[in-house]
Amino acid sequence: MGLRDFSRKAAEGVLSVFDLQLVRKSAFANANRRIVDEPAPPFPLEAGAYLQWSNPRLAELRGRYATHAASVHSQWSPEFIAQKVDLKRFRADGAYVWQGPQFSENKYLMTAYYAKTTDRLGIFDGMIEDGIFGAYAFRFNGKVVSRDLIDSVMEINFLQENFGQRRLGVLDIGAGYGRLGHRLFEAMPSADPVFCTDAIAESTFICEFYLRYRKARSRAIPVDEVEALAKDGGIDLATNIHSFSECTQKSISWWLTLLRDAKVKHLFIVPNRNEELLSTEDDGKRLSCSGLLEQFGYRLRVKRPKYVNGTAMERYGIGPTWYLLFELES
Image 1 (cartoon, rainbow, N blue to C red):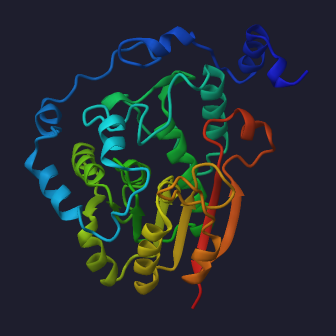
Image 2 (image 1 turned 90 degrees about the vertical axis):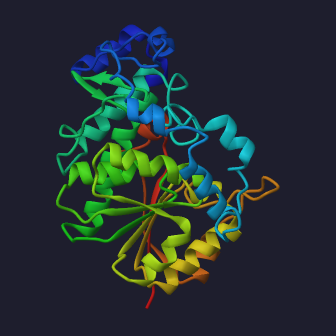
């Protein structure tokens, strides 16, 4: 009998082998939109005062980004941002992380188990999830976990698999609220800071706040300052996680020009779901970017699924996709 045929009772029997537990779906719908028993931390007073649509810093960034070449958006329109971006609950289900009741408890628990058992770096247990700013959180073997934490564990392990203990200057393109910049610093406090950039003014605004709040050494870099940063050298690896998939080829080309001219050797891309990177054009078409990457000198060196141990997790894990590592040819 396949997993899809298991009753809840049968599923609980399988999960009990791994010392896992199920929680009720109704818990997803509680006021705090969390599935852990303990209350969320109090919302920080400084966050409430700063994270306002009327904040002058946000207005400044919007003005600076308005005519920037990278700000050629298809999905991230002003209407999309107004509907999907919540300045105070930016870690909730929405523009930055797809999470919540659309995934069953089994999916969350199985994905957490997979992340922990494949964590060669041993960073899973040391990472903290507090559920603040709206993150969906759940309990796994007594530990509070989120998709933010799980995805970070798997991505950081992939980078370690391919770069070992090398110190890397990292530019995170499409950094959103700064998840990877925070988690890399949390996992490896002695590593070089991550430079987090985004062509969406609201994302940079939130990222600046979030990295300060987490006291991370990583830095948010406004998009109109990223060219000078890249030209100074020191960037070994650019990362793009679920961002280029939401961009036009024109916007992606701008970033690839920047990386090529700055001689950034490695590019790590996580598409939204496909085995290759597809753009999102103004008319909704999805275009392959394989030829575009090759045009700018980036050749695919490593390609593997996010879940490597067979097909079950591809079907039952959260957010199945592929990890693509490119290298700039000399």
